[in-house]
Length: 581
Image 1 (spheres, rainbow, N blue to C red):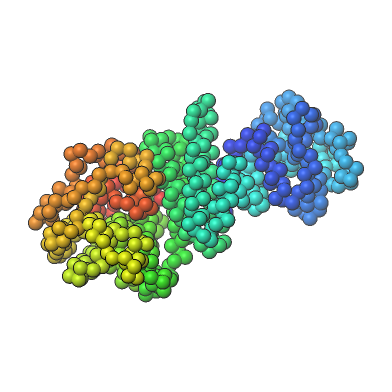
Image 2: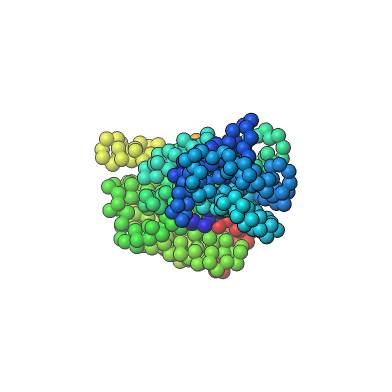
């Protein structure tokens, strides 16, 4: 974690200009290092090689006067020894003028140390030249000198300034609020979401040049990646990773909504940065689920954590969906990259999922209909790692619970809000017909049982659906043009697309699945959407998971068919696989 954070900070700091950014950031860093700043850069006055000077305690425990010589970018021979602004000339000015005549009386007896600082690196070809010069210069001036590159700056930042000052001025308030509310996830997520949105708005045009555009893109994406890593560090120290996990999910969706065209075209500026944010999601997911391993193994442990069954049911199905998604991504990576580590990770997430299903009986029927998407995602994991029998047994248990719900006319998955469910539960509100007016769970289960040939389940669901169809409408949902643009906006996504009632299922499971796999005549085909072109099936799955919405029907059915067809080999079909983990 520390290494990854330091590399990200190094990249982020490397984007700073010398004037107005780096020379403003460094005094803040000095203050966090408990330095007293003696001299700041001033325009219009000759500085004799000195950009900033400060008084502080060095690593050897001795109080010294530090003289900061600040440059920007990688240092080559021209920067070292070419013209009046070169490092060599500045060092000579410091020795011959500044140290002799510009020190205050109280500072003259302090040991002196010059820090030659850059947010880039020093070219290897200068090593011998710099070493020889510094040794001679130190003997002549009586001061020591040290080179500080971008990686060392990042280390100091990580150790001394891991707070809001790593963000641009406009975003510092949101960054501060995000970190301050780590222990209150909803507040943290709200501030963090605003921070991500604001950083992405900073990457909007118009741009004066191609270079300015590329820098804006990198600044926004690295700012997001850095803030997520900082948040994870703080979250782990607070013992609450929920906000870090949720914001990492949102960041993936927000970056996709902003840059999906660039990612689909494999833009070499955007793609690597977007991949680093996706990797951050995998890192925080592993840390989060590792922390909950004990709860997955204890019988009905979530029921002890939450005071109401609606809360525990919601928590369990959220875990089911997230375990399924992360495991599915690892399974796909194992196929594409032929990566044994990824395969082991996929198996590990599948183990967690099976353990949770075995220990929590509430997993046999969701309380909320929108958790049907979570169920589908979890089933994709089980099929991806050749655990078809576990998938069949879970589906059969859900059908048994549904049979009881159909018989008693109670406990059917509801479309009511969480608050409404509590009102109904405690007798302050009656169950309204609109709460059970539609179902997405039954159509999804119908597709799965038809594809997996689960004994008797298809006929049971088909029959019961006919009996309740007068009050409950089975629906699937299809995306429209512009879907990629709205995946990061819950309100727009809820109003996007077309919901269609499915026809009475035919007696033949095969015919039903084939019918469901075809696009609607007046609806856009998924082949035209950016996520499909890029092979990024993560996006519709994550969007459904994050916003509690539906998965596009055509994609959902194709995915079931491909996974059920590949079950005997225990692999994800190649045509649907890209390396995303």
